[in-house]
Figure 1 (tube, rainbow, N blue to C red):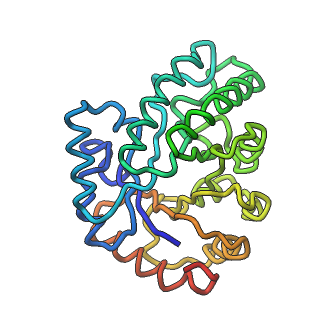
Figure 2: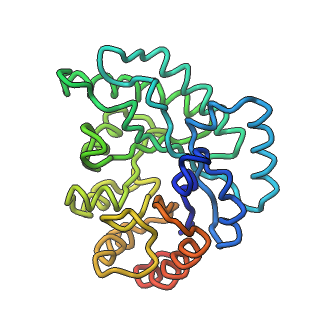
Length: 269
């Protein structure tokens, strides 16, 4: 299993892209880095070229991106504009492809949350129609979109992995798949059995400790059930630590030590 980190979580106010943590991630021993696509898409062309060169010279690739849609690109509600969302997505995925990204996380609660008074059923239809348009675009750019369920109160829509899996299956496109996030799964008290149900649709994993959403610097007994489910499913994809820390150099390195020590017990190597 390849282990990465969502660098945009390290210092979100001063470095929303996450590129400032690149060299620290390399020193800690991460296999790859996950950057914020919404912020990458907003970069000037010159800044983006510099970023691509910096990543290319670091020895660690940006294999995944989170934060697909910025909040102002509305995906649900009366202000949703499917055409505008697809135009933005085409630009963003083009940049991701230039960076070598293979999977893009569609959580984007700010863009996806359903406005007060708007029908949840109608919002689901809007999101499904968007996914049906995103699949062919993703295919053209050679990337896969993974749907991320986000727990309450951060999100009011698609809170469960089971809901995201159902949407991915209805979209019926090989470039639309599923992400499972342990932090959100635990917050919603959703069973890790969804991992077995998802099977090959599970293409990416996020991980953080419940509660404070921290780095897993110590092994907790509750982790066994989650990683046991991944092991039984023979999951062989990526896992990104998507967590907050005030000392990335310390917590990143320690978390990698803990995970690399414990994961072989579950057949995850």
